[in-house]
Length: 324
Image 1 (spheres, rainbow, N blue to C red):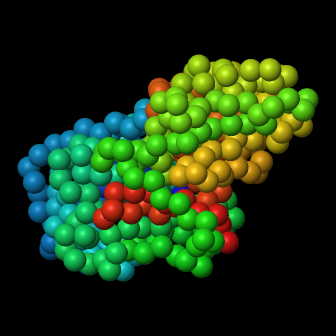
Image 2 (tube, rainbow, N blue to C red):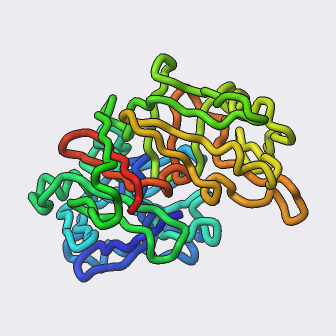
């Protein structure tokens, strides 16, 4: 998980959130939450002079199976030095297991998707910043890394020092809901000097949802079967989740995926594709491409750690560039 800090209310109450391009709503645990919110910082609307109840309840569910219920409020939200005024937020009174400590380190979740997928039916935080005229550019840039201090979310700009500018390619969003774009293709090297294995190409229905809130590259079971076909020792590890595969640790680096967008190919590194041993004594390692999904590819952090990503809200497009 990549976690950052926001403040809510007057005076400010501080929280940590996951910045999730796969959803559009701001979720925080409230002081009215039951024991499921223990260990998290709790939003107290009674202590904020800018808070107002919207007298509506909500129920959220996420792709990983986590859920939350609660009440809707509006309040001022401070993110990266910018203030979203009268922002709609969900104050949870119950968290499912996936949002509870210690599994879920963040207090809540801040959605960066389009308004069309808002369960609240209200503008997300970034759209509020745009309508308030707070930003010089209607975009945000993301760099993800497992190395401390190397990850960044830049609001209202792209950090040109973090990527090779000449390598940037943009793809128009296919449908303003999720950050959905066309994918040119996905391949992996063939084994024993055989040709590359093509899993998806332009002629197949290759639509990709770019999701900072998802760990893996997720596809259909059929595509995953095709990806691992002929790889000695590759097997489904259902105990780790739907569609998850493992590969012998000593060969996982030889089947790294290359994903193409906008005419440019980006290869996933071994360090991000290999998620570690299945168990302490196992010789198999968890691979970063999984089945269990649909015809849509979900491109998560296994890929996103290898590129700099620009989410251009104003022009409805996504850009990828090589890291500098």
